[in-house]
Image (cartoon, rainbow, N blue to C red; front, top):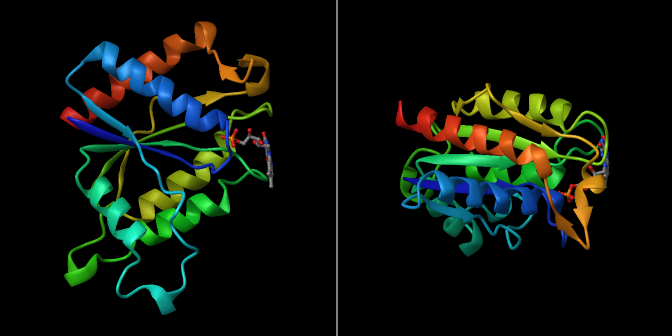
Length: 183
Ligand code: FNR
């Protein structure tokens, strides 16, 4: 089984990218044969229909990585009670038909959603918006469980995210997502 993580932040030291890394460790404990990768999409350009064809090399690469995944796990920050614009830009690129007319790569894809924020809602509101977007794209979203982690900066020591007891919730979501993909 191959799972690709999308962390919706370009920030160095991003809490959400660190959470994605911890999710990879959860999955490896669950089943070492799971192939897990945090997608590098930092070179995907702002979408303009003027540069859609031929697709930029970075776009072709991320589309291929998502297409090859059995499931995609989003780790979303919350900006102004929404997910970040750069994350929407990536999803917009993924939402377009592939070169040669093959369907867009997110259709039917099993999706899990998690997020961590310094604020109190743990990205719950941003996640709801992301569900709306991904449902429009015919994704197969796992709504239970979703993982929301509030007060994220209080869990960082020397720049490293440590979930403490919260790790059990991440393990539970990893278990649920593997079962959801297998259904
Ligand atoms: C934020 N941040 C934020 N936090 C929050 O809990 N609720 C919010 O609505 C917002 N809004 C917001 C808007 C903008 C424009 C920025 C730049 C930031 C703070 C944000 O969640 C925080 O920086 C996280 O650490 C971002 O996630 P990463 O980059 O650590 O993964």
